Image (cartoon, rainbow, N blue to C red; front, side):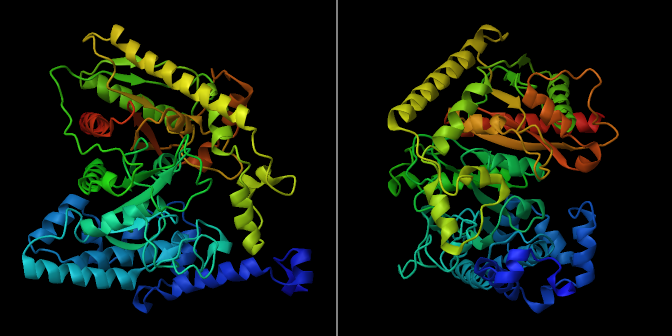
Length: 538
């Protein structure tokens, strides 16, 4: 009876579900796109599964010297070497594609692979450079990966749904399959970037591309970036185009999904964001505000930072608390003024965010699942516990939520403005440092709170994630004086396991006022510089 092991009884009786076979075929199709010379041995893959950490030394020892050298370079260094003819686009794309192939074999993080198409594009870029003696654009030859909702020519877009495989957003025979492009992918192509596949956050942690593009309506850019120890920018809505991007609840525009940038450094975020704005996306997407790049002004006074240790509802786990303390100490040592930040309660934003984001009952998610028959994953199963989507919120009730959101935004705005009364310079705080989430990673079934990030969507504030430290089981223990603020706070802290989190990245987010991305990038750089100086001293 061993042939039945690993199968549930219904599956054994009725045969393998069709959706599982479709998913398996897609996974195999992706693996088939990896060149034979880039295939990892079974022993390496098995070793990775038993390794606590596969970034750093584990991954680097798999690479040849040239691949390791090229993929360790930041975006600006890569561009300099390409423009000086020290590197070609083919060399850069090949190195990152090889690294991405290794990453995928160890983590299954890519939903689409485009190594052949990327290499063809790299040859075109090199030919252009040889002919014209200049770069195509400010992102010439830089490999980019996407979250699998951005349409890229030559690639499918599944949004993670099995039923969307080999379709255009669940529909067959549209003529758009693998042809249609999202506006941002057109912009990146014109700027010289080279798509090599789809899969984010983990891809940046393993340096499988020079930068990545994700999306965020409740922390989907900020939280994964923090958990993977990388940098990220989640802008306010209206700065980066979302035109032609597949999405859940696509008609929900009260609190819109935004596109964000992930990468290994602040300079990469700045380069990509500034480059995207240089394409004047507002000429092609009416929902993009006509705001070009604005060079930030440092001013005469040192900026003042707000710092929020917790939101009076759920306290962060010890590694995140220590990350906040490190940032606090670094800025203090650098001579910056810091204010305790006690804004309007995140409870208000939590009460607003979920009902607005999922106010329609998520029928589009349900219909997408029905296409293949795949069941909802545990994290969203509660949305369909009655065997289908919940009834939508009545329109008057929904409009009340929007009114509450406007009131919350105004209340928070006034609080921020009032900080000028507390600073020595008489200027309001320049940016606020706070947790991205309570966690230094996600344990299955123990992700309980997202309001630190989702509140930024309710407020439409930009946020930048910076890595600070890693969890240490000997240092990051729950304080004996811990007193829960709420029942959820107690449940959240009870879920903390020092051994399980040991070695996980712990970062913070820097938030700014609405549409202040350029200024926020400058403030984040101040913090990163202070952290480096503090680290050198200690």
